[in-house]
Length: 199
Image 1 (cartoon, one colour):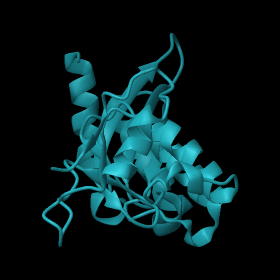
Image 2 (cartoon, helix red, strand yellow):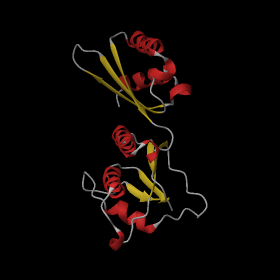
Image 3 (cartoon, helix red, strand yellow):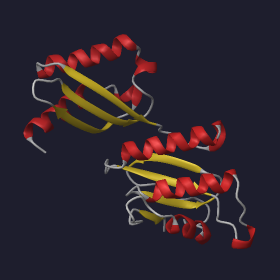
Image 4 (cartoon, one colour):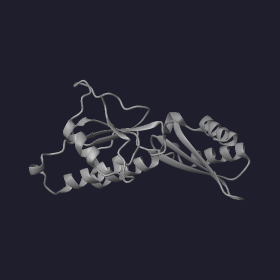
């Protein structure tokens, strides 16, 4: 990281409304010759727009422009801070998980904490929405470098700053059949090195 990049990240952190939308956990800076400064901020929390309003977001962008003395584009990448579940339907759940995985794959301070149903016995497996969802999510999760499976249960995926919390009530021992299902899922890059279970 260059000194210029460090300065930009420091300036963004100083004006970022962390108490409203969550801490800026990753600030990516890009610039093209003669073009505006492109600042992409990843955070766990709601998008800038709804809680702040369009005027406040524009003031934030202009504040950054004033600090850097050049045209600035601010790209807000918000990732849900709470658990994602199937409550709003499988399409919404899968889309939210996929977007979060894509946004945080290169953010080393963000981990993915997962509870998933145990894999049924081979003679009990049947095609259907549950199986399709499990296959899609297992493959997507296996491609992320920091995934911890906390045990068997109803689907829940949560992005957290730091390490995943230890499961409560069973000493942190995960379900082995769910572990097999997750680890056996093919990763996009051909590796499952980032997938592990809480001890």
